[in-house]
Image (cartoon, rainbow, N blue to C red; front, top):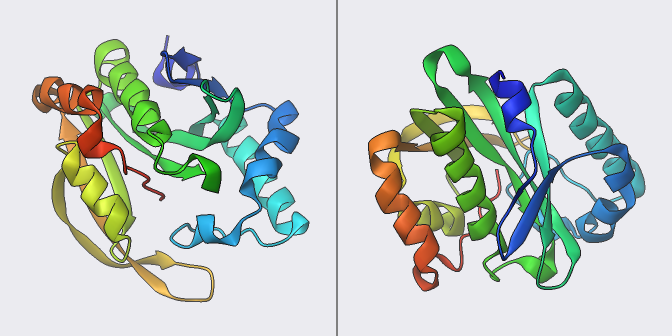
Length: 204
């Protein structure tokens, strides 16, 4: 099984369930996505239904083409869809991939949902897919996401200046982080520990 196939699988623990996105997820995702503050540091901005349709159609297209493995996050505490997170930039020959495109509805931020979703994706990447490197990137201005990534033991590697356009025309400086295979056992321990990383609400 290649990485594109392995990445697009259902993952679950006692806290969250991650399922590959389908067209049937449209309305459940819409129900938690229509809050502009979610998208402050995201590369898309959803303010209207038309914005959402464009965003969700692009998500489905990326997933179908294998450019990303997009997961819908369900919070098992409430039974509700909470947001989304993806594998992307999968370079199987180099055993390297990215976790990102991460967002949560307002009601699910700061509740541990994002932490447990990252736990599942990192665990699957290192322990089943055979990744040697998992990387993350976030806006230089996103102080909360940067602290959260440091809290789980991800290493800050540097900033790529003027990396991409953001809504409104600002050029984002993107800060890169990574976790390597030898570091995974300690990162796993920190993620499982809980309180220190309860505010890991990174968005890409």
